[in-house]
Image (tube, rainbow over all chains, first blue to last red; front, top):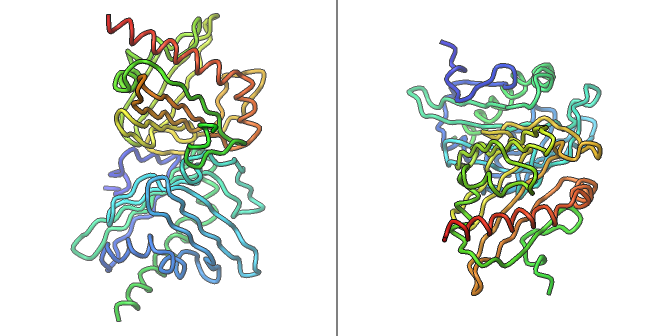
Length: 174
Length: 174
């Protein structure tokens, strides 16, 4: 069975999914996703850095990160939380700014792969025997946006970040 | 005092607001906004009609209306609820489809005034001595979108709909 098929309303044309079992508790992952100082160390694949993180953990609250490329360029991402179930589910979008205001549209541009395109992301956490089932789902408006995001390296990129997150949790535990 | 200034995060460049006191109870207004058969009679300024209405009254649930012009053209509007406080506050957007998927972008087009542009709408209801303070706030991404919506007749259009809504409630009460 393809586990991706168990996701509610999963749309293979429009969604990207990374699903992994990791051997850290879901509560630690939740904290790393929702605490600015614990998000910055792992949120970008190194040598990129997350230099700013702003979190207002309420529905309608801001989720903002600023990523810095190795040559010093900064990319500001502002979004809004949509659904928050502590230790279980975190949903946000960049199609809305804080307090639900629609975002200005910027088309994805292959020459500027960090240029914003609209997406909604959902992190789901579930305790399993080996630790936590971690599911990151990203929903797009167009098949073209999904394809482009896939070609930008979604699975590898989000996978590296997850590795960095897990490593951070394990280092903190010691 | 301009009462519009009491709205949280009100942005005069990006928001449109209709605020009125109406002499019907807020519970009746709430029901008319959240029950398809009670929304269709008043939701468009006549002689336009709302021929279809679909409501899944949960955060992430669908809010869909199909409006029909006097010459029979249909305009389909699909959005998603963002915040629901019964009898007090209803928030939805067309920047997201149901279950928070980003919507495809369509630029507002002066030649097709019903063509979708992105907005988030918030209806607030508050009991006052004379009945209900009714506040409809629409948030846009761009000043241009706000101006265009204003020129399309936001205040008059939403005002006529509110008159139709109040008339319906009074007729039902008799």
